[in-house]
Amino acid sequence: MKRIRIVGAAAAILVGVALAAVIALSACGGDKASAEHGEPGFVFQDADVVIDLTAEVMEWEVYPGETVEVWGYNGTYPGPEIRVTEGQNVRVNLINNLPEATTVHFHGLDVPNDQDGVPGITQPDVQPGETWTYEFVAARVGTSAYHTHSNTAQQLAKGLFGFFIVEPKEGSDYDREYALGLHELSGLYYTINGVSFPSTLDANLLQIKEGERILVRLVNMGAQAHPMHLHGHQFLVVNIDGNTMPPNWKQNTVDVAPGQTVDLVVEGTNPGTWTFHCHIVPHVTNRGEYPGGMLTVLDYEDHTSYFEEQQAAAAEAGE
Ligand SMILES: [Cu+2]
Image (cartoon, rainbow, N blue to C red):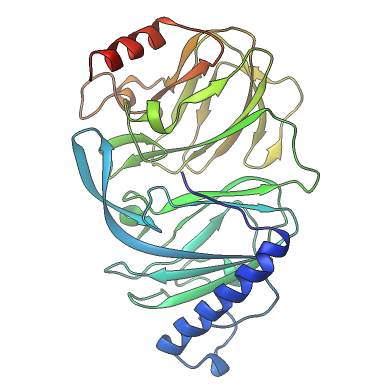
């Protein structure tokens, strides 16, 4: 998964580069000098972080041998992970290369109303070939998302979403961190970060060592609930929708509703290789065949399991 993280001096350089890009784009689409608040090219504050999101149609391998059309951002499904620090001024330039109008909504971030990305309610639709600029302060710490809000029933199902993570200024002390986006691609494929098992073992393998504490961020951008179950552990549910949970709230299955974000902390107390999967069993299939879909594993790096022995044997056999 691509990660965008731009801070400090590097941001100043990139802001300059991106500003030039914005000006170039607005020169194609209209007169920057006459741009109104919320229109392409309008700039109302200095940005610490500038992100260009190009919405486009692409071919995507969901699992080996299954390549389908998806709609994503910047060549990926889900779109690139956006990660900023609390208090930063964020500018997002949407470039619409889709065959129909689109917008971007910032889900869970509580942005100003005119930056909310809902066509007909807070802005006009952004037509094919057009750009639109969003600006806001990343005020809310936590796991959030961005996604299309135009023709949402079709466009979100096709893949137009991504993580938007706001980190606290003081940082965090987890040993590792993972962000897993749950989705039903076109209502057909059950994916974690855009792929189904067994591709999840390459793309979304969760690694841990004994004694470590790892953070797992979940967002559900599908249309169905996904009760995610971890074998061998009771994880801490530390945050839901960016809101801190009471301390020591433990579960081994957490039902992630459509639109919800959940942060889990897994403590490395039980070495092995443990499956982590949606417990609606049809969601652990690929076109009806089990196993598939929303299934990955939590693997202890310092422990050799049956899983690793099988992987090594397969590699030796030249598979
Ligand atoms: Cu599910």
